[in-house]
Image 1 (cartoon, helix red, strand yellow):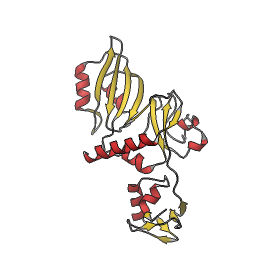
Image 2 (cartoon, helix red, strand yellow):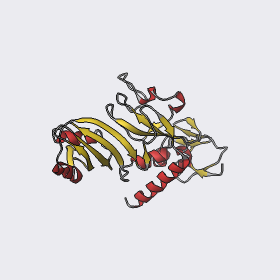
Image 3 (cartoon, helix red, strand yellow):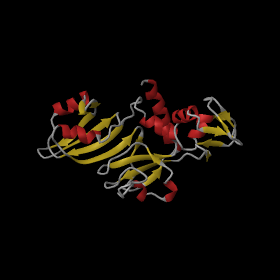
Image 4 (cartoon, rainbow, N blue to C red):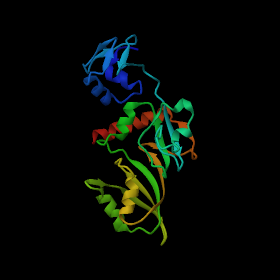
Length: 244
C-alpha cells in the first residue's frame, strides 16, 4: 500500500466515515506509531500503526450485501430488551457489517449491509437526497388530495416536515396499495404520515435503496452486491451529490 491520508485509512477499517475520522483526528484521540496526530492531511504507510482511542485499527476488505428483512426483527446488532434482531438471521462472519439506515420491526424488505463507512455516510447523509422506494398497503381507500398533501409535506412531529412521492397502484373501499418514494430518513416516517390521515399501515416493504433493488431475494435471504453494481451506485451518488 502506498501512502494514504489518515482519515481514509481510518475509514477503511470500517470504524466510521472519513468525515467522522476527521472529527476523531481533531479531537486528539488518534495516534500513529505512538504519537498523537491532529493534522487532517497526515499520510500513513503500510508499516505505520494507527490507534484510535488507544485501540489498534487496520484496513479491512470492504464487503457489500443486500438482505431481505422479514417482519418481527429489529435493525440493530444488539437489543437490551432481548428482541430478535436481523443478526439472528445472519452468519457470524457478517456480524461486522452495519445496516445502511433502518427498517422498523414490522416493516420488511431491502437492507444494505456493509463495513464501508464512507458509503454508509453517503447513503444516509441528510444533505444528499437518496431515493428509497416502498410498496405500502393501507387499511382504507386514500384519496388523491391526500397524496398531494404528502408530496407538499406533513408535520409528523413538532418542527419536522415529512415529504413523500406517492403513486397509486390499486384501491377499493377497504384498502389502498401504493408506491412511496422517500428522500428523507425520519423514524417511522411513512407510518406517521399515514396515521396523520387516520389510517393504518397494513404492510410496508422497501424494494429499492438508491440503485440497489430487492430483486432475486426471498425473505431472510442475503446476497453479495456485485462490484459493477457498487460502481453504478457510487456513480449515482456522485451525480446527485453534485445537485445537492
